[in-house]
Length: 175
Image (cartoon, rainbow, N blue to C red; front, side, top):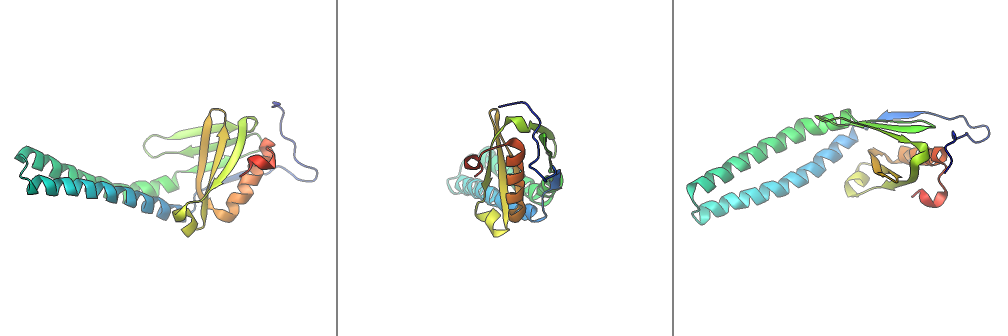
C-alpha cells in the first residue's frame, strides 16, 4: 500500500464527516444492558433463594443478599446514567487522511486510524439495531478493528462507502 494522500475522484471534493450517536442508540444500549443485567440478577437471586432454601451458613446468606443489592444498584446506575453518557460522549470524525473516534465515560479513548492502514469496512446489524434502524460500522486494520456503533442505517451506507473511497478499498472488502 502506498503512503500517498488519497485523491478525490474527478469532480468530487473530499468531505469531512463528523458526528455523534443518534438518540436511538441510547435505547439500544439500555436494552442490551438490561438483558445482560437481568440474567445476572436471576442467577444471583437463584443463589440467594438456594442459600435460604438449603439453610446455608448465615455469612453466605448475608453475603449473597449484599451481592444482590449491589447488583441491583449498579444495574440501575448503569441503565439510567452510564448508557446516556455512553451515547453522548461518543464522537467520530472521518477525514480524507484519517478517522478519529472518541469514546468513554470514566476512561476515555481517542483512536486515530490513518486511512492508509484501513483494510476493510464492515457493517453489522443485530435484532436490536434493526428494530431502531441502526447499524454498526467496523473498520479493520492489521492491528485490530474499531467500531462506530449504532448509527442510522441510511447514513451508515454513506459513511462506509466514503471510508472505502478514502482508504481505496476494493468493493469485495466493503461488506
